Length: 101
Image (tube, rainbow, N blue to C red; front, top):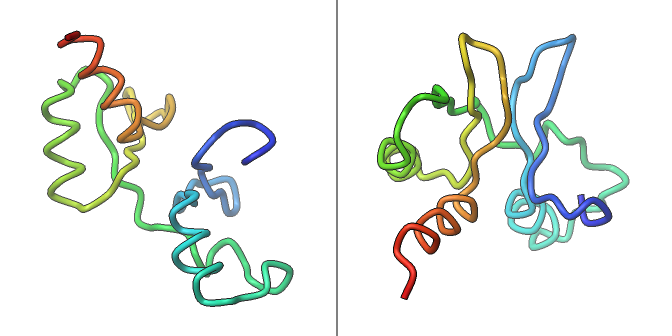
């Protein structure tokens, strides 16, 4: 994740996405607990279930879903096909662009 400049990855099992692992998951659930990353499985620290948002929904709806579910990452779908991940950082960039000082 660090080498590729990304903060989250979808977790796949048997051809199906089952969760998301984020920098926060790694730091809070693994590093702060002093767990050995060589022994911890991704499924032990990932966030699940996936919280989804259809691509045509508004950014306001995205913020509401993030608040309601206390998450910082939403899986963006279109006709049940995953397009990507919308993060709280993406939302912040949107707000800055929409309301420049």
